[in-house]
Amino acid sequence: MTDISDILSKRLKLGFFPTPIIKLQNLSKSYSDYNIFIKRDDNTGLALGGNKTRKLEYLIYDAIYKKANTIITAGAQQSNHCRQTAAACAVANLECHLLLGGEEPEDYTGNLLLSKLLGAIIHYTGDNRKGEDIPLLYEKLLSADKKPYIIPYGGSNIYGALGFINAVKEIKNYNIDYIYFPSSSGGTQAGLHIGKKLFNVNAQLMPICIDKDETEGLSLEEMIYTIIKDTIDHFHLDISFKRSEIKLIREYESPGYGVLINEERKAIKTLAEKEGILLDPVYTARAFYGLLDHLNRNIPKKGSNILFWHTGGYPAIFQKSLKI
Ligand SMILES: *Cc1c(COP(=O)(O)O)cnc(C)c1O
Image (cartoon, rainbow, N blue to C red; front, side, top):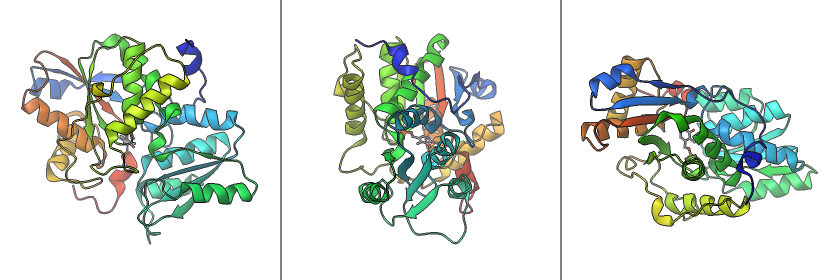
């Protein structure tokens, strides 16, 4: 067995960690059966922050270790992952290529604007927003004498997972019973599952599934299980994990990825007006709506400590199409 602290030390510092955990005082008064806390990964500090900073600390470390000089990754035009990757590449002095779905827009807004500002080279890929075109660009860059390194869609692989294994240490002393968070490409959830076992944290994961579509024909459950198994194997971790331990809350995904419904708008307004904290319209609005709906239905045990893991996403608030 390998020493986990040794594995987790191999990172490039890109953010401010640990991020704060605070109690949502007003919300906890409204839902007086519960103590509600928030983990502020919206404040990781890398170019407007977010959960991808944690993954990129390990991914970019690995890219540099493998002597890459060019990074390729992919996502939607409003991808927080792509924006944070562009920022990480700026820090590490790496060329950054982003494959973004759709056609080039007339106006650059939100994450797309920032990715460009951060110096990324942007390729538009039409209907392919999950990295389908990565192999082609990889070959092109190779033949142009670059040393490309691929970061998968959402930064979700064994290195990305290390970021959230490490994150579990930050909540160890809070006696949390439930962790609500948005789950989409699986790296966050995979890391939390493994971290819980390695650091003996008993909190129950309450992952709100954001995207009803599959990626490359795989369900999100299968993707998460694959990342977990590969991480355990690759780093020789002394834990076991069963497929049946992965449970996603799929009650809120039906509107589809990036489609904001009225209940989610209301959830954004609730947290803003009660606590002065903002949510993004794609991930955290859906997850926070899910949390409020669960509280209204008394799904968590009464008296429990609940953590809402804010995963970031602020730039998407500034899309022109957002009607709050
Ligand atoms: C990427 C992202 C998520 C989902 O994390 P995964 O590791 O892809 O499941 C949640 N919230 C925000 C703001 C994100 O950018």
